[in-house]
Image 1 (cartoon, rainbow, N blue to C red):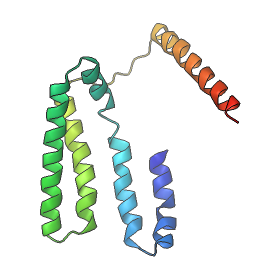
Image 2: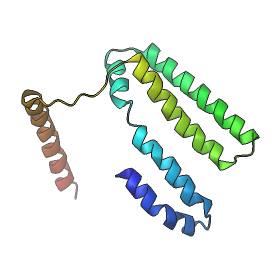
Image 3: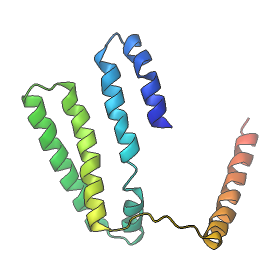
Image 4: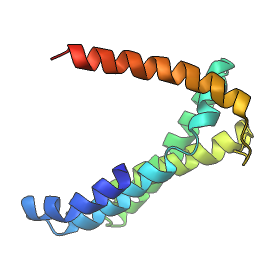
Length: 137
């Protein structure tokens, strides 16, 4: 949804700031919203298992790889695209390392028993949030 919103308002923002390049930059940068979430489960699993050393190594390597790419691109004259590459490459490097470090992949299977457990918890959280929202006015 955020990707779609970003793409749809990119033209308006480019016009508002009177910067035509902004439309393309926002659209390319929005790709990170799609694939940036791919390593979320692996990151959560490593956090739950308290594998902080692995997480730190993943982050350090990702920052080094993306910063090296961005600096090289900046010196080569790519301008703002260097910054776009910085964030997109950081996300890609993180995802690649997380999939190697914690080899979990989604499966196409459904379990009613697991769904009921998640639904029971999720419905309680949703009810609580709705109550808080209703009484906040």
